[in-house]
Image (cartoon, rainbow, N blue to C red; front, side):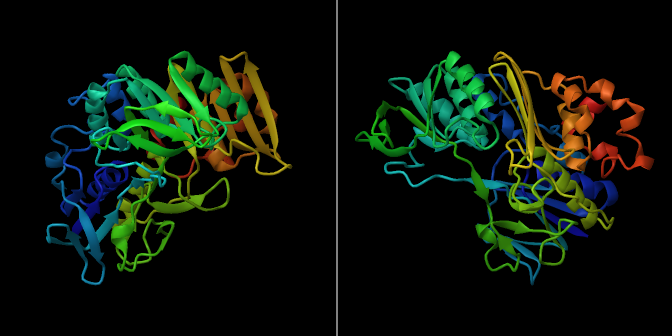
Length: 442
């Protein structure tokens, strides 16, 4: 059996590991347009900060590919897929045969149309790959005024800002929404986060956007013009607005695309023997009860495992996922799970706040917990995520959840998470729970 995997990150390697678990001899080829072995993408900001290096950013052992008899094809860009002939076509014209194909191409940065932005400039870029971090590290050395503008106040923008600040730059985040992490946080948690950024030398300009980048004779930025008309000095401009599914190479393949790649419960696409997972796929959102793109690492790993298991001939279904993000901003831990702001008037919110050190918010739909924001004190975040994903009725435990007394809750016989007979078991094998859940449940 010939397996081909497009993508050398979390979804693709989880798929490869699952295949090898059930098929010890099948030929597994892993294709990536990057020249690097598997690295932890969330750590690229730590690379700027010096907290990780060229030696420590990798998340697989040096002998990973050899030990598992995987064939890596690094620095090879896939330009199309011929599903009728079962071939993957590389940019250099090479054609790779497959019996089963997994597509895990991730996302490509979204860059809003902005006058003056040029990705080829050594002082401008995006921030999703290792090469992006290396580019910004070099740019910091050339910055005359030590001023950086980061467009976008989401997770990508915030981590890019931390990294650039660590390189000695003054950073201003320009965010169109009224607060940083605007899609995940509410007003209270957003203000606390912004204050923590400001206290550490990162300015925030919310409700703003960059309309123009003024350039010098070499085509590098000297300043930016905001929507309000304000001009800010800028040696470096980083766009960290977000990503979109990387699916353009699938045109003409027959694989159904609707914003992202459409898959069924086995992670198979509309084409037989072609599977997909990760940031480019549309999955069932268990909170909003509809198809959605949820680009987070834990789900990419789960999707890859389900796809690889089915590709190797062992049936398994993926029940769907939900939004979940975990980040730390200058020592302030933040976890957002599911629906963090009510979708309608029937949903109720319960909050606990201790000055600007701790903020815990729960969103309930009737007796069912559907979302949470944990800031400062993230105790039990893994347990809460499992409860939310299962749609369990737990309103009477809201006080324990708010004060962080969740570990005693778990061993309460009236509500035993591990009690399979009572229907409270997590879907799937325990070993396949995301790492953050397994750590908190032990």
